[in-house]
Image 1: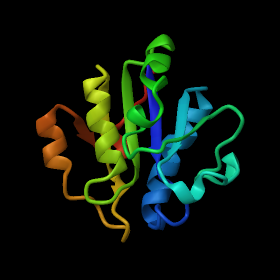
Image 2: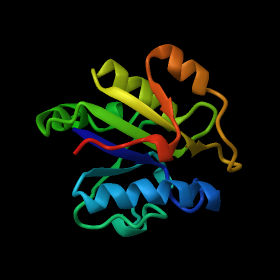
Image 3: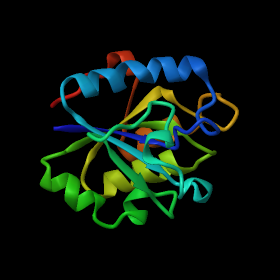
Length: 156
């Protein structure tokens, strides 16, 4: 089963309207089938923000909302990998706002180490200026799959 992991998709980090529209489609598909949808924040300044305000996609009560003190959400939330394994999640589709490299990169690489297949959505990971990140090739070399959002189907 897949999980969709969105990291730092708050208003300040996820500044591209086009990218938000692209990612909104897969968020809707995940919700429509009752899939595992995880919103994670790695920003200290958002630690006290209500869950529903943590992302431009409006997490709801069915979604998993996490706050990590580390850019690597698997390091910041120690029981995340075991919990996902317990839920039979074996593949994580990941996107979000990322510095060069930052939380999406760190979490994707950690996901590989935690024995998950990782798909990084090439058109839904942006830098702080709303531009595509430059590390996708390195992620593929490390073992992640890089795919466009429209070409990604979730297994639920």
